[in-house]
Length: 298
Image 1 (cartoon, helix red, strand yellow):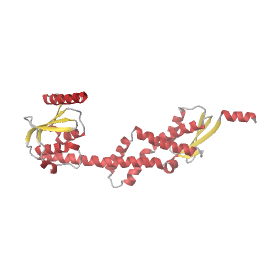
Image 2: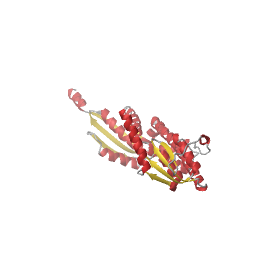
Image 3: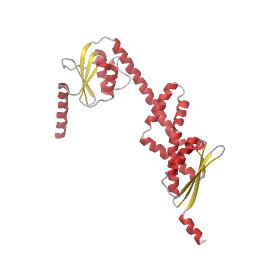
Image 4: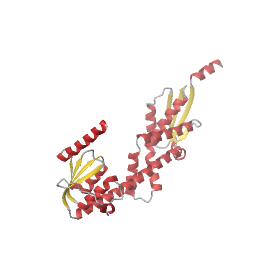
C-alpha cells in the first residue's frame, strides 16, 4: 500500500480522445502533437468506420497544465479549420439578401478585420470551453463540440460579422458617393482655372490663383452638394470645390495625407496635384512652427 501511494504521488494518468472524420484535421493534430511542449505524453491514432480517434495519454503530475495546453492547441485548430465556414454560415443565414458577390466581399472583410486582440479573445473563449469539457469528459467529437458547445465563440464571431456588414454598407455608400461626384465633375464645365488647397491640422484653406483666400459663404451650408457622409469641417471645402470645379486642384500638404485628402484625389482624379515643398507650403509650415513655439513658451 505504501508503494502505491508513492507511485500515485509521482504521476497520474489522464487520457483524452479527439474524434474527427476530417483527414486534414487529424493530420494537422498529429503533426502538432509531435512538437507538443510537454513531456510525458503518448499519442496514438486509430481509424474506424466513421471517425479517426486520436488518443493522447498524459503521465505526469500537472494535469491542469496538460489540459490547458491541449485546449489551446484545439482552439487554434478550430480557428484554422472551422472559423471560415462558421463566418460563411452566419453571413448566409443573417444576410441572405445580399448578392453572392457582396457576401464574398463581406466574408473577406471579416477575415481581415479579426485583429490580434480579437483573435486572443476568441482563442481564450474556445480554450476555456475545451478545458471545462475535458475536466468531466474523456473524449470529444470535434464537429459536435464546435456546433453545440461553442455558443459564446459563435456569438463573438456574429458580432464581428455584424460590424463588417456595417462597414461594407458604409464603404459601398462612400464609393457610390465618390462615383456620383466624379461623374458630375466630368460632365460639368469648370468655373475656375486653378484652386490651391492648404491642408493642415485637418482643416482646409482655399486660395485662388492670385493666392487670395476663397471665403465660404452661407449659401454653401444648404448646398445640394453637401454629402451625407461626414468629412467634419472639410465638408464646406468640398462644397466650394464642387461649386468652383477647378481645372487644376493643387493640394499643399502641411501635415500628412488623411481620408479627406484621399477622397479629394478620388473625386478630382487627374486634376489633383500634391505639393509639399513650394513657397506656400514653406509659409504655412513656418506659421505652424511659430504657433507651436509660442505654445511651448506659454
